[in-house]
Picture 1 (tube, rainbow, N blue to C red):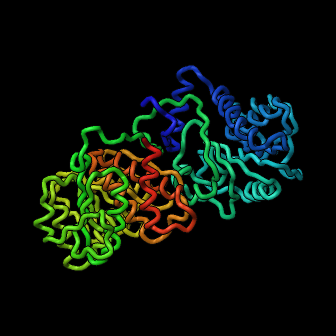
Picture 2 (cartoon, rainbow, N blue to C red; picture 1 turned 30 degrees about the horizontal axis):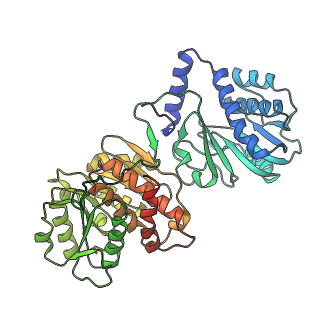
Picture 3 (cartoon, rainbow, N blue to C red; picture 1 turned 180 degrees about the vertical axis):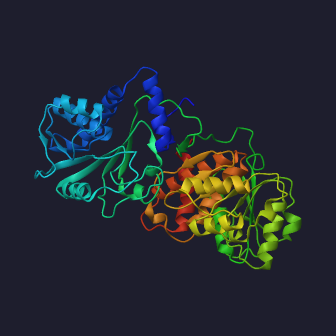
Length: 466
């Protein structure tokens, strides 16, 4: 791995990566200096010469804060430190000794423009003490803006859990060395504001999760035609509108031909082809490169039959919505082609039960366990979407626009991912590309958009990848 800017590390992986840097000749103090000065660059921009208060804890996260405060002071800025406790590590003590500004005790009345939270970082596993929680809350209340260094204090790094109630919301969180899972997982990510990364020389870590980034795509070749670009078969059902919505979204995400297999052409756009033949007969077109089943499928006997027929095809498949509730291990037993599943939380729980999983662990751990048990690529969708593959690959999406919380947007996501799958893109990559395009389309839409507006914005999102 040469590009390390997108890797996401667990707390254990981060400790091990830092240990490797130190073993290679660096030191805790040197890493702290790089991290603190790098974070100071972002705080300096936000403060704009106004007063900065840095809340320092007793560990190395507090040491980062002393370095940051000194960097701002040397630039001519107004930086004061509030020491929540005496330094407890050699590196923190050394950083405090190098700070030439004012150090206040936890009871000192102080206010300013920017509060920088360096109380605790990645290693926190238990709630803040009553005193530390009250101190953080008071300082956050008395400053116009709040910045967290590495992670906001009181948030668990690997799960994104809030370890205390009433934690402040932040305007900016500056990750140090690498992204952590909490930067992407709810409920922590909702309180972090904008995210920035300061590199400290961490190398690529084998098996690290990745942040989903803007894909680099290409326009069709000069000799392209609709079948060469991919034919996606969308299986309709009892509620045809959802499948139509998925089909419209798929048309804008790269596939050259999207065909809807449904009983009626009513309310279907003129450019979306509908085949009303018997599914078992018409779905055998050997030009199909992918099949999408689930949106609007229903849950009756006819829906079960359509699911079985769809999964019997020897092409890549995406299973969504009602099909996820109907899906059982036996439906995948004979499949050799790849399959993607796109469950929301309720559907994720249903799949865990179907595949005899206990649902324990963090969101990435749950998605990965299901991927391995089922053999499918899992897109655990929601405000903190996680993609996991049977081979252990994990990717996390940036926090999505909250306006996506409206009916039909999941159908759009299914259509977009299935379209990328139909183009011949490898399943895990297709899932990540589709998640990014879905999020970008939402960003391009006005507030309170509908699923139809979202689907029509997909080509605009795709244009940003060319």
